Amino acid sequence: MHIVFHLLLIIALLGIVVHAQGARGGGGTRSGSSSSSRYRSSIRNESRCQGASCQRTGIIAGSVIGSVLALIAIIFLIIYCYRKYRSRPSQSNLAFVSQNSTNEQNRTYQTYEENCFKNGIWRGRYYQYGRWHEPHKIILSFDRKSDRVFGHGYDDVGKFTIDGTFSMETQRIVITKVYESGTGDSQENFGHTVTLQLTWNSSHAQFEGKWSVETGRYRGSDKFELKLEDSSEGLHEKTVD
Image 1 (cartoon, rainbow, N blue to C red):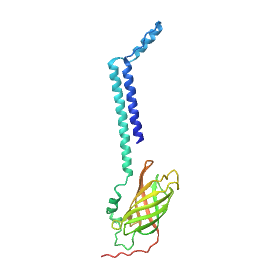
Image 2 (tube, rainbow, N blue to C red; image 1 turned 180 degrees about the vertical axis):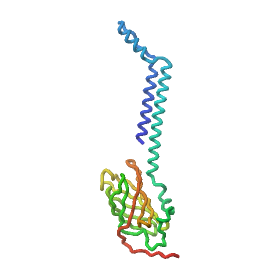
Image 3 (cartoon, one colour; image 1 turned 60 degrees about the vertical axis):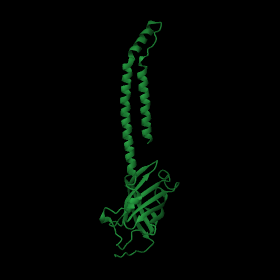
Image 4 (cartoon, rainbow, N blue to C red; image 1 turned 90 degrees about the vertical axis):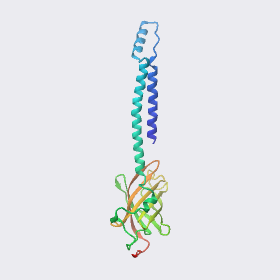
């Protein structure tokens, strides 16, 4: 947003300069006592724009330059708003968790024998800067009474805590991942929050979706995968009514 502010400031300054140049066009230089001085003064007066026509020319030139710069500022503003919109989650967390998957082949229903929400050690990996980062360990605990998930972990950015919600019916999960400042990579970790919106993929036996970040320093969004490594609970058999 500071880029747009600077552009608007430049537009205002240029308008003032151009207007001032047009307004001073009627002024001349007094003749000196010598002939050479009168000659130089005559040349300067001829080279300067004089009268109302000069003011109109200055106003027109300033308007054209201001319009072009204003158009550039609008383009930058549109790009800024578009990137900000893209960095946000596609929908609210509550709506995402409640919505059924549109890909029925990837959805695992509750009639399956294995429950996808298991307490234990999970492995998460995220795609950023054109590559997949190394999988990192996440400890997750699911509370099926409140449909809440809690946990913690550590990745190449730093140490983080987990808080989120999930739905047994839609088999979706939303995780808020908060990094602890002063841990991990000082260039990447500034105590920010990452939002994960994930859907269970039965074909790959993992959650898949995207991560989203929106802070004053960085905005971005890309792919994220979460796979169970070691469960601390047994398989829960589900029966079909």
